[in-house]
Amino acid sequence: MKKLITCFAMAVAVTGLPAYAEDSPHEISSSVAFLTDYLYRGISQTNENFAVQGSIDYSHAPTGLYAGVWASNVDFAESTEFNYYGGIAGEFDNGVSWDVGGLWYSYSGSNALPEEDFFEVYSNVGYTFSDMQLTPSIGAGFAYAPDFFGEDGDSIYLHGNLDLSLPHDFGLSFYAGYQDVEGDKLTGPAGYSYVHYSVGLTKNIGSLGLTVSWNDADDDCDGGTNELCQAVVFSVSRSF
Image 1: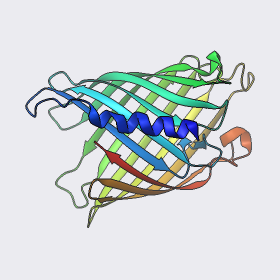
Image 2 (image 1 turned 60 degrees about the horizontal axis):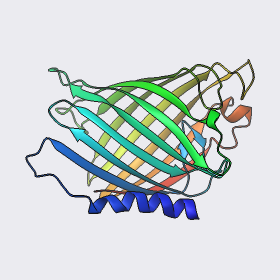
Image 3 (image 1 turned 180 degrees about the horizontal axis):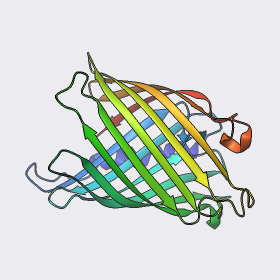
């Protein structure tokens, strides 16, 4: 419970930060979310229990540079997960958006181990068909870690998504990802790979965002048991 309160306090406290003027190129934003489960690439990180998450972000509009920190409770090693990230994003003249950056995963807690921390680089592209019905948005991304969680060797992650805008501020999203880990200390030399996917429905009510998603994966997820890779997740979030 103490970790949940810490994450929540971090996210809410930023609302007291001084705001930049409306015409300033600098922007600070924050968010807080409550979820019935926290899934990372299709696998529950909270043993199918509740999660509280928060973030603080900075962006510089003229250059597209950004940086931020995100946190969530997790159910292993009595720790809290912190993600520190930064990169640059923009849009080509043809409307294709792009994003390149790096992300450091850190786990802080009484039983957290240094080898659990790892670094990853990523790139994403996206495009919105604004003149089509339901305003479909498509996206794809790639991430690479030279030494994945638990010093488990090279990791490659590929993902793609399709988002649709429905009437009455509803949204429908489809997502699929492929994770491949070389394997070393944590899972042995054989490594592992799997595909996971989800379908989500979103609704905005005032300043709140509501989401319900169905999540599943193939049989190789979670060491072949697939026990922590199937979930219906509800979340409530707010951005500031």
